Image (tube, rainbow, N blue to C red):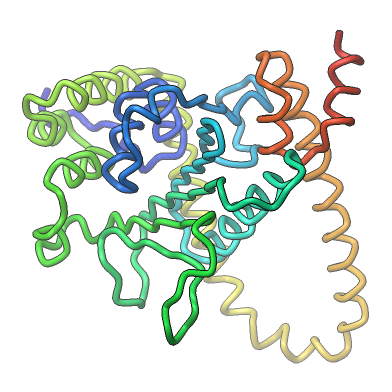
Length: 306
């Protein structure tokens, strides 16, 4: 029984499920990474981005999890793919950062946007287990603004002692439980910690769910298909290069069309998300801050749905 195969939290749906349902775990994890007091986080509103689509199977969403309290917004992301992921996430947090000023009337340095990336891949960059990024001067290291922070957590380095020996032991266990794949591992990591015991129990329950098992199996297949496509793309790179000059005009037109379609789709997604959030009675100012939709349009949606 102890060696029973479990679905780890590095699987997207398990990650979101545990973080939404185990709020004490999520709040403590954020506290250990950022130092934000638990007394602040206890009043936070968890914005479930799955409300865009009421089916848990959907991956068509804006982010994994958003937490909002007063003038603080925290975005948590699980990343399993190295290529393009962090660029996408960085553009998203800047979007949240920009949207916060659409709600207020002044540019005041009293808000904070934080993104925490849990990266299940390694990079060529020599980095620590926990890496904090700010916007600062490259030479003097003077911080330009304290309103924006990004934390990249390198989950791969959890297995290397040189990266864990100087990190808070509690944080190590809170991160290691994300990668546990057997009940034995869960028991060893959680020990007598009540918060982690609850997380372990939830992971076991969801791992036994036939629906969740089906999603996990599909995710593994999708990953293999993704890797196959990447390999095929590299192989075909030279052939495409030969045609590039001839097809440049066509490709440029296609790119513009694709970009326009993406932008239109993103706007539709935001409007759909706003409608779902209104049904959940989430404050219109929070909706505006997260989606970037102005209050006039949100109130119009509210009237249309009433």
